[in-house]
Length: 451
Ligand code: NDP
Ligand code: 2IT
Image (cartoon, rainbow, N blue to C red; front, side, top):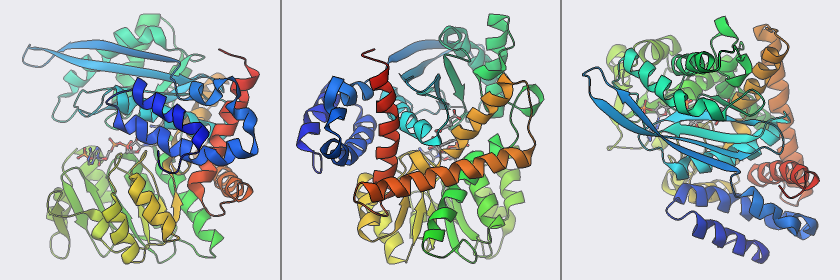
């Protein structure tokens, strides 16, 4: 309960009691409540109508069985989740994650974060998240399809373009979205393009959605660097992960003149002091679906691979760090190493990648720190643009879509920056993001009555 306003402590205690064994959810709520002390001191009406208690309780949680048949004819069982967290601003909106670590606590933390993130975009979208403990690694294309179809056979009844609109996340890309959307369309006998985002362009996807999260995080960090009169030009950058968010962060950082010298996957990291060769990385990860060590093997001399149990990517000295793999991947110790090596800015591409200790180390050291719910909001913002195109049966150019994305990221940056100042913590983007996101959702909830 450290650092939490007295009036908010019983709320956190209640969340911990009600959601036993869900440490990631507790962590996400703890971080937001830590920021809200300043809000209730200034605007005590936010304590009325159990607004904060209500915001911490998902509106609906769906847990279901997913049976499917593997290529050997064996029946496999996975568990599916959809947490419809908050619909005060619009239909539930948020990705689906396929990873063996998925459980209800992880989906709840993601849905909670999503609610504030979506509010920060300024778009009319509520917050939700879903997924399964299914492990897509090593599965055949046919197995992936059967799994996605079985999942959707149950989930379809809970979705709708005005109700709940999923997208991708870890382990879910275009291929999986195609299979899930296809089964939804079949079961409903209805081409409802806006029920899914992250679709391929051919059947209603948006240009720039694939790139949006990584590009958006890079735009956010660029805006932070500008507040100190500098830019990406000539900076050394480390990006963890090598999935969707990491790859398009690397692409945009390189476009802005930064040099990305390291990236990773769950098996370890590679260092290439000459700068990561993006075409090769894309071929290994997007086309062949191989492990990251393959990058070092194919590059040869001067490029090295370090296995995950032998070292941390955050020991690589850099000016800017962009954690883009998964939650709690960057510890207090990692943050201390980054600070010692002179890091000046951190932009969270992933959701909650920095532990609370790491965030404290960054803030105490005066590092510019962009929390995920602000920095990685470009993905979902572009999803909202995809919904907008689907609703008007339109298809925008890449340039037009990216321009909207860039303007939205600038807006989120400025909102967080100004809110932090207004609440007496200049430069603290964590506080700015939590407060600005909360106020928008809570104000709407108040106007909608006790529901
Ligand atoms: P991908 O599945 O495309 O890539 C995930 C990457 O992170 C892979 O390199 C993966 O390595 C690594 N990774 C995943 N889990 C772990 C783990 N437990 N330990 C170590 N490494 C891990 O996912 P995305 O790029 O889409 O997502 C990355 C992060 O960004 C997530 O936190 C997600 O919630 C967040 N995010 C994604 C958005 C999107 O639009 N896709 C939008 C906003 C946030 P490996 O292949 O070895 O598992
Ligand atoms: O965490 C996220 O914001 C996402 N995975 C994207 C969600 C979306 O609906 O585009």
